[in-house]
Image 1 (cartoon, rainbow, N blue to C red):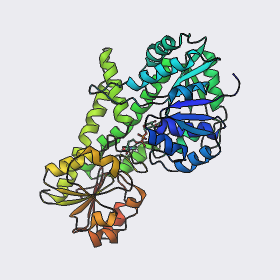
Image 2 (tube, rainbow, N blue to C red; image 1 turned 45 degrees about the vertical axis):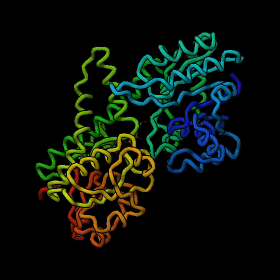
Image 3 (cartoon, helix red, strand yellow; image 1 turned 30 degrees about the vertical axis):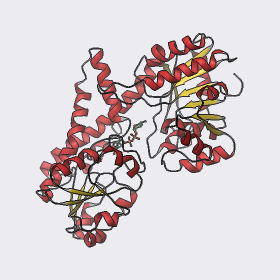
Amino acid sequence: MDGIRISVLGMGYVGLAGGMGYAKHGFKTIVTATTPSKVENLNKGIPPFYEPELEGLVRTEVNRGMLSATLNNLEAIRQSNVTFICVGTPSLPDGSADLGAVEAVAKDIGIAIRDKDGYHVVATKSTVVPGTTENLVLPIVEKYSGKKAGKDFGLVMNPEFLRQGQAVHDSLYPDRIVIGEHDAKAGEVIHKIYRDYKNDKEEPVPILHVEIKAAELIKYAANSLLATKITFANEFSRICEEFNIDVYEVMKGVGLDFRINPMFLNAGCGFGGSCFPKDVNAIVALAKKIGVETPLMDAVLYTNDIQPMHFIDIIKETVGNLKGKTVAFLGLSFKPDTDDTRATRALPIIEKLYEEGAMVKAYDPKAYYKFKPLTDLPIGYMDTIEEALKDADFAVVQSDWQEIREIEPETLKRLLKKPIVIDGRRSYDPERLKKAGVVYKGVGWKNRE
Ligand code: UDX
């Protein structure tokens, strides 16, 4: 296959951060979206969402003609010889993934390659359960193209492991590349794209070639294990609280074992985001369908659901009855450095605060436009942290953006009615706040000392 040209169907975090990476590595890349304003803006170098460093890098690639966007999937596919499917696979009410968008773009790929000369590689990057690429994407592309997989076009599943907030770093410097291949020729084409990728230690990135179904499951297994690590720390946080032990100290001692490692053992008010809740639910739904029991994953989802309510218990133990209290609520996004509010723990916590009769003055540097549509509650959306803190009875931290982490104890003392911080992300040094005269309580902290 001469010069690789790439089309990326979908302009979310995976599609755009990945597409920018391909362009930066010298592959002409066209990204598609279904919203005209997203395409117009992207062609001016403006991404449709906030992600650190992405805008500058996108602009550079757009300006040097390596990255562009179109509304027209067929045109994008026809101008390329590798197509990545990067559309969303949101949860359905039963937890399984909605594959409507995957089906629709598979049909577009079939139509577009029908009269196109040369070998074309179709790569699923969207998170899909095992079997989806071969049993759904393959037959649709074959049907609409009249061509044969493994002969006229290649089929691959290439999962994406990027984290929001670190999407640029993770897509430019991945830990590993997984290529699930239906046919070895297609796997080799995708291998070529990633051949020069390095990890963040400037070492060549391991590229793992596996069966296509295994690649699909690797993504779910990785996310389920990370969600389990967090949940493990959250469960231990409760045991720690009873004994007045700091769970972070305990997990540090645990994580120093190289077989475990210290990452993703940070207890908090639960995991949110577009991946962990959706992917663990999807794998549980799939297992149920095929008659496999998943008590561990069931427990992960259960514990994560009740963790926000456990955080409410800590709040109530600290400040008593919530009726009539005003809460400075810091951080609405599901984690810092992203405007994404999907499955954010802020929502169940705020809903419960209102149910208990409290009022919320919230602050988040980026997430208002995505949080506001989630609830009609009369939340005060403040322009600055200071406005949120001013005359509130106490402060709660749900998402520890840097500017939230950097609040000075003196500011808390000056603005809050009572200097009390209840920390859902363990963002502060408790001893420093205590010394300055601020009451500090948090998940997995020595709250009863
Ligand atoms: C995750 C995976 O990390 C990534 O590999 C995958 O491709 C997509 O899903 P993301 O959802 O962007 O990425 O964020 P991540 O940093 O993993 O955090 C997810 C949630 O877990 C957040 O709500 C975060 O606050 C929480 N978390 C994370 C913890 O509570 N404790 C931790 O130790 C780590």
